[in-house]
Length: 290
Image (cartoon, rainbow, N blue to C red; front, side, top):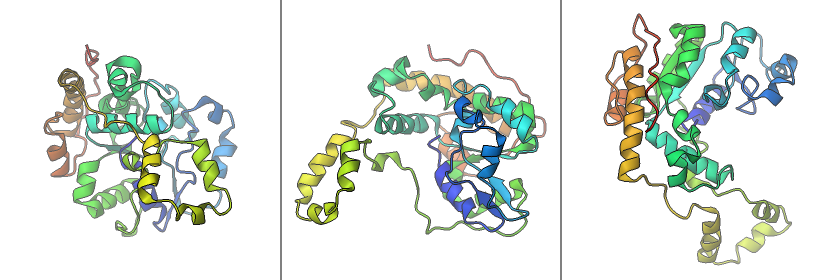
């Protein structure tokens, strides 16, 4: 979640030989009410794929433990030969972006400080990358899961996309399309509002809008923007760094690299990281925030 999955989905959707679902997130293997619709419902989303196409989707709920505990088992039962792409960004940056997203979607009312201090524990859980990966690595093996990092994707988008193509078994060349705009940037969005969306559908809305001074429009927009940028206190920054460093230490062992919150961007940007030949699947139980 909040790690360029929408952009990557769009890049793959434009690639010949690849069929990506629409909508991007199907939630089938994670969300119980959706899974209850049955495998035929899921398969129907790929009915337009050409023979031989590689079919994929991009549901971030699949890596949201402990919220959705049945995901891996369900995938293993239905698609035992699945290939996975797991995209990661700096864990604290991801946490902040998720809070902004949840606030915009009106999923939470807690302040950022309250959320970080425990009111919204999933903010922290979803940034524990080794914890999220462990079940997939145990069930499917390291060869089935490709670790991708946002900072490396920015440095070498073509190279990373080619790595992804090889991982999923795509034979033809593939290149990054710079004309596809980045999607789902929370900082540029406004909080959901039924009133605003209803007004947009009123005939003549666009014409009337041109008569309103831009400064007044911006003042109205500010009502649907966060009142302040989410910022961590010194104590919160230290606590998160301690928790995430424990998780990153294990991830780094699996990847043969030293990873910490302090060096994350540089270490993940300078070269592609792959699993070591023998990934020891162990997860520490003492990484929770005190």
